[in-house]
Length: 263
Ligand SMILES: Nc1ncnc2c1ncn2[C@@H]1O[C@H](COP(=O)(O)OP(=O)(O)O)[C@@H](O)[C@H]1O
Ligand SMILES: [Mg+2]
View 1 (cartoon, rainbow, N blue to C red):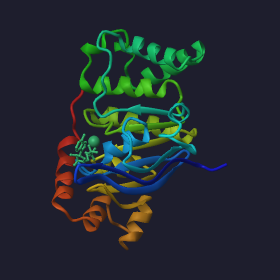
View 2 (view 1 turned 90 degrees about the vertical axis):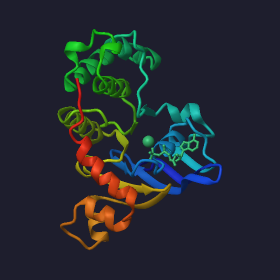
View 3 (view 1 turned 180 degrees about the horizontal axis):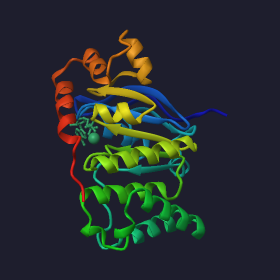
View 4 (view 1 turned 45 degrees about the horizontal axis):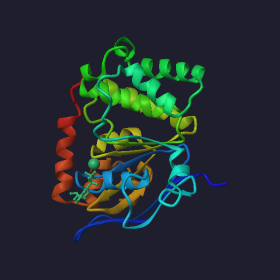
């Protein structure tokens, strides 16, 4: 029995002459809140799509709890849940109906569904709007109901692609607390972000990707030790490790998006 939940082995995606994801290998452990950090275009979404069975790797392997996603997708997909960067929800369903739909797909027990739904809607302050149509929701609310849908059936592993974009600071904090609680209870979260502060504040370990290649991976303490900078912020470390223009853009975006609008 291993405590590894997500395993990438030489995972590669080639588009024409360019490698969107270039020979990436690492493991994510059970109960971990893993941050996959990199600037726009680094290869985060492409990697996640290969891990969840939406995009076939050019080479390499994606394993979920020891099951190869591309050899045995039906088995591997039982364990996972996914929140895309642009959730495409059914606009003519209410938030609650959407969650009921998810529960029916996963053949959830009625009592468990009710319990989980109430818990999640409360945690995300969505109770008041749960019976309104999704088309009336703000981007942030759509994001939150998509996250509720991904959590309601209690997945072993939750993949989130840039989940904090469009969330106001309170919702981002709620998300952090919810993910923390779920991971402490044994769920694994694999979350991409281009915002340094989000990775730094939310995640147990952080893997940094740029131009399709992994630059480094570790806990904040390990990343700091790597640079011999006990007081270094992730921003300092990131710039030291990369130092490119794209990475500088990422720093600036961080301050712009930190106060994303919602509701
Ligand atoms: N369908 C595609 N065809 C060609 N190039 C693509 C395609 N999808 C992504 N790319 C390229 O792959 C690289 C990684 O993209 P992506 O994984 O979306 O990055 P990120 O999610 O980190 O912003 C980018 O250079 C992007 O332009
Ligand atoms: Mg992306």
